[in-house]
Amino acid sequence: ELEGTPMRHFNKSTKLDNVLYDVRGPVVDEAARMEQSGMHVLKLNIGNPAPFGFRTPDEVVYDMSRQLSDTEGYSASKGLFSARKAIMQYAQLKNLPNVGIEDIYTGNGVSELINLSLSALLDNGDEVLVPSPDYPLWTACVNLAGGTAVHYVCDEESEWYPDIDDMRSKITDRTVAIVLINPNNPTGALYPKEVLQQIVDLAREHQLMIFSDEIYDRLVMDGLQHVSIASMAPDLFCVTFSGLSKSHMIAGYRIGWMVLSGNKSIAKDYIEGINMLTNMRICSNVPAQSIVQTALGGHQSVNDYIVPGGRLYEQREYIYNALNSIPGVTAVKPKAAFYIFPKLDVKKFNITDDEQFALDLLHDKRILITRGGGFNWHEPDHFRIVYLPRIEVLKDATEKLTDFLSCYRQ
Ligand code: PLP
Image 1 (cartoon, rainbow, N blue to C red):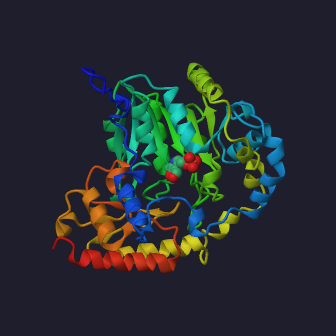
Image 2: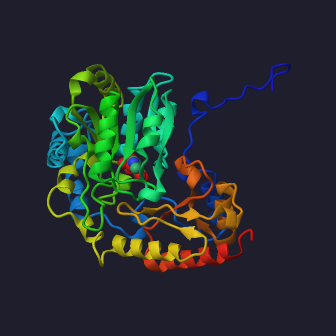
Image 3: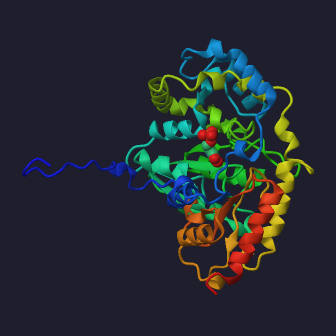
């Protein structure tokens, strides 16, 4: 220190005051410390398929390797023509209205585009309706962009569908948009047409935009069909997000996209903002863009996982039954994705702080889950399990959880 001059410290931006991303938060840091000291931690906390033996389709890897030398340079800001064309056709197959090639934007995962689309839209104090529970990047990016994330509740008693009355009651003069995560992370819910129709009606009545995060749209089980809300709203302005991280098990390659649809004339100015930010980040990872056409066309290997006998389907059956047989635990059966969001009997277990619960489970059984609060769930009574590990591993985990809960705080 110079004499008389106090040492200058560098603080994080106050823009981060309302930003939370617990999927990789303090409990995860503690798990990392435990691992560094040589302990084995069973990680049920992150939706990354590759480490659990879900391999990228060979065709995708082969096609990327063949194109590596052609994809050394930057691409156009929105992405390669071939990728955007394939995404456009996919959007058209899902009946997204009024979609042309200019309405397709590729990104370094859906994550980048969530951030970009909200940054381009929000002024300080603008409100966005975000689900609770949510994939927490949505709340974080709304708040980081200066907006206010206002949470509407999804109702566990009704298959975790959005509570439309609650959604309606949260609309104010400052509400700009509704965010939907369908299929949902962390609940695994899939929204039927009737629910989507009520949301469209509400958005229409209050002139709101719709953001629909559909990254799990190809991981739907039980023969159910995923419906894109944008297909039901040709008169509204919608932005639909998806990507290959989950359906093609290439979360590490970083490729996602967003599609503008419906009434784009009311969003001209906003689209200028989107284009500005898209240009500023130059382009998304080009080798990953180069395999979009391969990935979206032809045989969809993910389909083998989500039918009876397939890994994801059988793991879901296992985790659903195993959790519901633990005294004090109940869980709604997920229809899609690879998450389950069980409820704890907080009275029985005397739980008031879900982070403490997660830490206690980690210390006692070396199992890492994510607390419900990490998904902007405002009661301490839930946690999320990623059921990507094989059944033997899930069995070990649920047996340990049963043992842990049999004497926890009782
Ligand atoms: N949206 C949801 C609902 C997610 O669950 C995830 C990842 O877990 C993402 C977006 C981010 O995905 P990407 O790998 O495309 O950035």
